[in-house]
Image 1: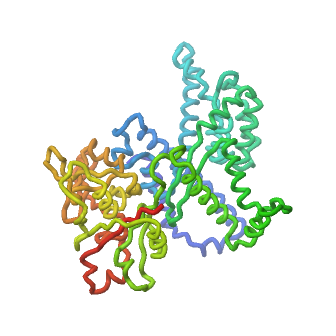
Image 2 (image 1 turned 30 degrees about the vertical axis):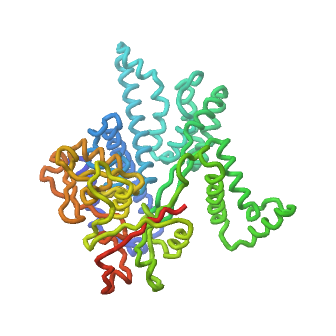
Length: 503
């Protein structure tokens, strides 16, 4: 074990051996309590700095340039961020922060080392050229973070706000601005520091305002994901023009609640009063109003911006839940989402759409979706989606819509049939990893599958059980008990799922 690893192991052991409890702090004097907090904070910062640097090194060894030879890929992770989350159990936000900070400090160290080497070897033109590329200007930020002068987020905001050297903006100009901003931002939060840095850049480089506006347009993005609490969250990044347009829409949706114009005419007056009297929270009105606008938009002129079938939500429900008398236990699931939805939601969607029945036998295998084709057809894909619930790779959260159907037995080499029992859902990244890095999936029962790692990752090639992520699948370890599943009814041995495509 390395010296760094041994040091932290000993430190953790000492803290654990101390048996620190809340009562111990309650017994401290004011001075001792203050000193203990300062010491604990210093320790926490030191550990955080180490975690950031090690995260940056893992990221470097997992570079996209390395392809599937990168560290994260070889360990079965889609990228360095996923690997770090698996190692620490931290969320995406904390992981990304560590990566940003560690990368910034590492770059600062490299820049300082390069400058020193260049000064010691003035005859080496290659070093002089590298030192002149402008990578030294931000090194004071790494030093300030290491010395506790500013926080990591503040340092990141300053660098992002100042941007990079450009025509008319030299590294020396940015370096001078950095030193000034570190002093100015020592007592500001990260958002305030970013505004100061942007203002400083505009003063240095007024001619570059148009280029920075174009850069903002290029950086626009929209991401949506499912949180651990079941809520669907999103993050969008828009340039000022598009962003203020969206902001104005939201402001108008909730203007009666936020001090909008009080003197309005009919029919606006009725709408204004209705929003004021609405029992929903202001935030909920804004959210649901925006979704309603999206519903109107996608149906207004199909094929112009959104091309294809209308956006859908696929619902999975036991047929017996639809037929059973109300017990309060009936429910279904939205494909790709872990939480149950009430049967009323299923019935509401069934009113405007249809159901595609998918039969499972008592072992959980689909039995009525077709066989013997070269490629899995739509019917079989529906069965796989209902059975697997998404990518079956351990810890992967990709929903069925993001997956591909993998043949456990290769069509040519093994003369494998395209039966649903010989298929399994994998997202594209894990499908590529399996084929390119010699992982293997075997079937050990009717619907039991195991992942076999290559010898390069596990010399013993110990099998890893793969679990269905569909909560209504009979063999799933997360199946929710229902009245019909616990009764003596034959329903236990023959489950029918309906995949409802709801507009």
